[in-house]
Length: 391
Image (cartoon, rainbow, N blue to C red; front, side):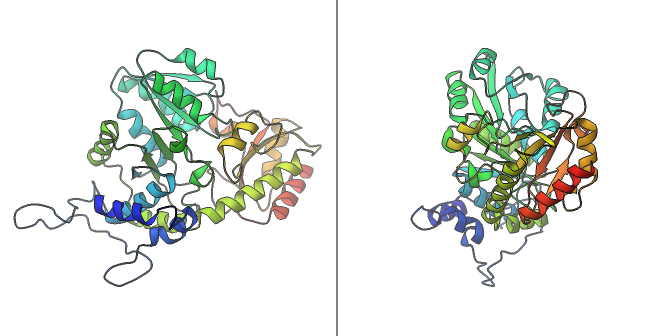
């Protein structure tokens, strides 16, 4: 595996292969036996030992490792500029692995605005692992500093933060964490490596719900972690995956590889569409407010402009002027947008998040979350227009 990753790292030298090409060609790997431009899918669950009882080919059992999974990990390592990566059976499995690698008694600082399922896990499950968690506003650096304790071992950030798209200063939080002897893990699902590479800003680990933009076709559930350094803490995470078994299946890994080939094209299209939609509805009489980092009135706009290269993402939220009932009615009347959970796919999705998340949700009751796909933005705007009028 080390030789494989070293070859990929050499191939991705900035003078030879840029990120768009890395993604499009999945690192340019050609199958050695057939010369196929698409890598084979390895589905074997067990492997032959050498006569002296060793595994020199590098594979022992599929719960621990898989060649197709390794290929996906190598692509993502290159795209994030990391040292190593691991794919998991879901984004939640990837995130939980980070927290489960901490010692009991560790203190964690997490954002108030974050993926609701992980926030619930931190509130309900993490204490059973002996972890204590404080939720703070991550765009308030003084609040973060005040939350740090001697036992603080991890600051978890999510930027932009779902569903109000709070933008977090990764470099500043990394400085706070490292001064306290803690690590920073960044959920960069929405930004993707196309727009932000958190390791370059000082984060120690990057997490992705690979179900979303990395795959991009709403047909794979997957998660990913990329590390800046393959240190002892990273080895704990790797050991957890090997022993607990939340590895991604080979067919899902192959589909994820396929999705990552068009990552740059899809994210670019989503950014352009989201920007057009945000601009249009920021002046709409039936929309009280548009939450999008690309708008000048967004509290995190200046930070996003510095930290997100090439666009502000494909996610935005709108607050409907008529309140909760009007917001729900608007979602009920769309024809092109799909009323569904998730984000980052080629199809545009709309959802009333307060209904989904329930009590304690940071989503205002009049808010709709929009995941912009790759459709023509004019069609999406016209569909929202008629839905707002009907609502």
